Picture 1 (cartoon, helix red, strand yellow):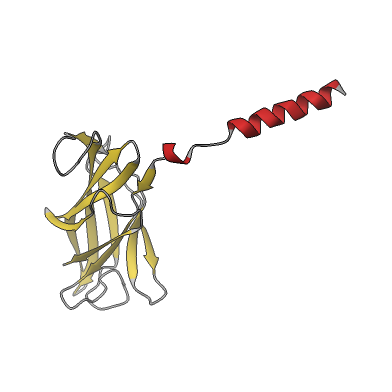
Picture 2 (spheres, rainbow, N blue to C red):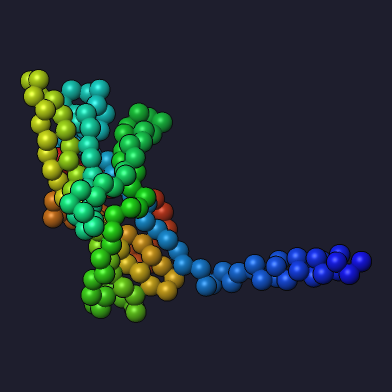
Amino acid sequence: MKNIFLYILLISFTVVSCGSDEESLQRIDQVLNIYVKDTNQQDLLNGKKAGSYTGYSVNDVFGSKDISPVTISLRMRTDSVFYMEYIGGAKRRKLDSTGPANPGSGNAYVSKMAITFTKTVNNTVERTVDQLEIHYRKSPTLFQVSEVLYNGKSEFSKEADAPTSINNVTITK
Protein backbone atom coordinates (compact mmCIF):
# COMPACT_ATOMS: atom_id res chain seq x y z
CA MET A 1 0.00 0.00 0.00
CA LYS A 2 2.91 2.35 0.80
CA ASN A 3 4.39 1.75 -2.65
CA ILE A 4 1.16 2.68 -4.41
CA PHE A 5 0.94 5.90 -2.40
CA LEU A 6 4.57 6.75 -3.28
CA TYR A 7 4.00 6.06 -6.99
CA ILE A 8 0.90 8.27 -7.02
CA LEU A 9 2.80 11.00 -5.21
CA LEU A 10 5.73 10.73 -7.66
CA ILE A 11 3.42 10.89 -10.68
CA SER A 12 1.61 13.90 -9.21
CA PHE A 13 4.88 15.80 -8.74
CA THR A 14 5.96 14.91 -12.25
CA VAL A 15 2.73 16.20 -13.78
CA VAL A 16 2.84 19.42 -11.77
CA SER A 17 6.50 20.09 -12.63
CA CYS A 18 5.86 19.57 -16.35
CA GLY A 19 3.52 22.55 -16.46
CA SER A 20 4.85 25.51 -18.44
CA ASP A 21 4.43 29.22 -18.48
CA GLU A 22 3.26 30.30 -21.97
CA GLU A 23 4.94 33.68 -21.59
CA SER A 24 8.37 32.10 -21.03
CA LEU A 25 8.37 30.37 -24.42
CA GLN A 26 10.45 31.74 -27.27
CA ARG A 27 8.86 31.91 -30.72
CA ILE A 28 11.13 30.31 -33.33
CA ASP A 29 10.71 31.31 -36.94
CA GLN A 30 13.52 30.07 -39.17
CA VAL A 31 12.06 27.89 -41.96
CA LEU A 32 12.75 29.17 -45.47
CA ASN A 33 11.06 27.99 -48.65
CA ILE A 34 13.36 29.15 -51.45
CA TYR A 35 11.94 29.39 -54.97
CA VAL A 36 14.33 29.90 -57.91
CA LYS A 37 12.84 31.36 -61.09
CA ASP A 38 14.04 33.08 -64.22
CA THR A 39 12.83 36.48 -65.43
CA ASN A 40 9.90 34.75 -67.21
CA GLN A 41 8.87 33.15 -63.89
CA GLN A 42 9.87 29.65 -65.06
CA ASP A 43 10.63 27.28 -62.18
CA LEU A 44 14.40 26.67 -62.43
CA LEU A 45 14.32 23.84 -59.88
CA ASN A 46 12.19 21.59 -62.09
CA GLY A 47 14.93 19.53 -63.75
CA LYS A 48 12.51 18.25 -66.40
CA LYS A 49 12.06 21.70 -67.93
CA ALA A 50 14.54 22.95 -70.53
CA GLY A 51 16.97 25.48 -69.12
CA SER A 52 16.37 24.43 -65.51
CA TYR A 53 18.94 23.18 -63.05
CA THR A 54 19.33 19.44 -62.75
CA GLY A 55 20.96 19.51 -59.34
CA TYR A 56 22.38 21.58 -56.54
CA SER A 57 24.61 21.26 -53.50
CA VAL A 58 25.00 23.53 -50.49
CA ASN A 59 28.16 24.21 -48.49
CA ASP A 60 28.36 26.04 -45.14
CA VAL A 61 30.82 28.93 -45.54
CA PHE A 62 31.30 29.09 -41.74
CA GLY A 63 31.64 25.31 -41.46
CA SER A 64 34.45 23.68 -39.51
CA LYS A 65 35.91 22.18 -42.71
CA ASP A 66 36.36 23.46 -46.25
CA ILE A 67 33.56 21.16 -47.33
CA SER A 68 30.72 21.33 -44.81
CA PRO A 69 27.55 20.21 -46.59
CA VAL A 70 24.18 21.60 -45.54
CA THR A 71 21.02 19.62 -46.25
CA ILE A 72 18.36 21.61 -48.04
CA SER A 73 15.52 19.40 -49.23
CA LEU A 74 13.90 19.78 -52.63
CA ARG A 75 10.11 19.86 -52.23
CA MET A 76 7.20 20.23 -54.61
CA ARG A 77 3.93 22.04 -54.02
CA THR A 78 0.63 20.52 -55.14
CA ASP A 79 0.75 22.74 -58.26
CA SER A 80 4.10 21.10 -59.26
CA VAL A 81 6.28 24.09 -58.37
CA PHE A 82 9.58 23.08 -56.80
CA TYR A 83 11.30 24.83 -53.91
CA MET A 84 14.22 24.25 -51.55
CA GLU A 85 13.20 23.88 -47.91
CA TYR A 86 15.83 25.14 -45.47
CA ILE A 87 15.09 24.32 -41.85
CA GLY A 88 18.56 24.76 -40.37
CA GLY A 89 22.00 23.23 -40.34
CA ALA A 90 24.40 26.02 -41.26
CA LYS A 91 26.50 27.53 -38.49
CA ARG A 92 25.52 30.96 -37.25
CA ARG A 93 27.91 33.71 -36.26
CA LYS A 94 26.96 36.34 -33.75
CA LEU A 95 26.91 39.95 -34.98
CA ASP A 96 26.77 43.28 -33.18
CA SER A 97 23.23 43.47 -31.82
CA THR A 98 22.63 47.15 -31.19
CA GLY A 99 20.85 49.42 -33.62
CA PRO A 100 17.47 50.07 -35.19
CA ALA A 101 17.55 46.91 -37.31
CA ASN A 102 17.65 44.82 -34.13
CA PRO A 103 15.63 46.63 -31.46
CA GLY A 104 15.69 45.77 -27.77
CA SER A 105 18.30 43.71 -26.04
CA GLY A 106 18.38 40.92 -28.60
CA ASN A 107 21.23 39.54 -30.64
CA ALA A 108 21.84 39.25 -34.37
CA TYR A 109 23.27 36.20 -36.13
CA VAL A 110 24.24 35.37 -39.70
CA SER A 111 24.66 32.14 -41.69
CA LYS A 112 26.39 32.00 -45.08
CA MET A 113 26.10 29.21 -47.60
CA ALA A 114 27.47 28.63 -51.08
CA ILE A 115 24.91 27.03 -53.38
CA THR A 116 26.26 25.29 -56.47
CA PHE A 117 23.65 24.79 -59.20
CA THR A 118 24.33 22.39 -62.07
CA LYS A 119 22.72 22.02 -65.47
CA THR A 120 23.65 20.48 -68.78
CA VAL A 121 23.98 22.73 -71.80
CA ASN A 122 25.02 21.19 -75.14
CA ASN A 123 26.22 18.02 -73.38
CA THR A 124 28.44 20.08 -71.07
CA VAL A 125 27.83 20.35 -67.33
CA GLU A 126 27.73 23.98 -66.19
CA ARG A 127 28.10 24.98 -62.56
CA THR A 128 27.01 28.26 -61.01
CA VAL A 129 28.09 29.09 -57.46
CA ASP A 130 25.93 31.62 -55.63
CA GLN A 131 25.97 33.00 -52.08
CA LEU A 132 23.00 32.75 -49.68
CA GLU A 133 23.20 34.82 -46.50
CA ILE A 134 20.56 34.53 -43.78
CA HIS A 135 20.31 37.11 -40.99
CA TYR A 136 18.51 36.23 -37.76
CA ARG A 137 17.27 38.31 -34.85
CA LYS A 138 17.07 36.93 -31.33
CA SER A 139 15.46 38.28 -28.19
CA PRO A 140 14.19 36.57 -25.05
CA THR A 141 10.83 35.96 -26.76
CA LEU A 142 11.79 35.57 -30.43
CA PHE A 143 14.26 33.90 -32.79
CA GLN A 144 13.48 34.63 -36.43
CA VAL A 145 14.82 35.25 -39.90
CA SER A 146 15.15 39.00 -40.37
CA GLU A 147 16.68 39.19 -43.86
CA VAL A 148 17.87 36.96 -46.69
CA LEU A 149 20.53 38.13 -49.14
CA TYR A 150 21.30 36.32 -52.37
CA ASN A 151 24.60 37.25 -54.02
CA GLY A 152 24.65 40.36 -51.84
CA LYS A 153 21.15 41.51 -52.85
CA SER A 154 18.34 41.60 -50.30
CA GLU A 155 15.61 39.18 -51.42
CA PHE A 156 13.54 39.01 -48.23
CA SER A 157 13.13 40.98 -45.03
CA LYS A 158 10.84 40.72 -42.04
CA GLU A 159 9.95 43.18 -39.29
CA ALA A 160 10.52 42.15 -35.67
CA ASP A 161 6.80 42.19 -34.85
CA ALA A 162 5.77 40.12 -37.91
CA PRO A 163 3.92 36.89 -37.11
CA THR A 164 5.69 33.55 -37.04
CA SER A 165 5.35 31.74 -40.36
CA ILE A 166 7.18 29.85 -43.06
CA ASN A 167 9.22 32.44 -44.93
CA ASN A 168 8.91 32.31 -48.73
CA VAL A 169 11.88 33.67 -50.65
CA THR A 170 11.81 33.97 -54.44
CA ILE A 171 15.14 34.33 -56.21
CA THR A 172 15.16 35.51 -59.79
CA LYS A 173 18.16 34.44 -61.88
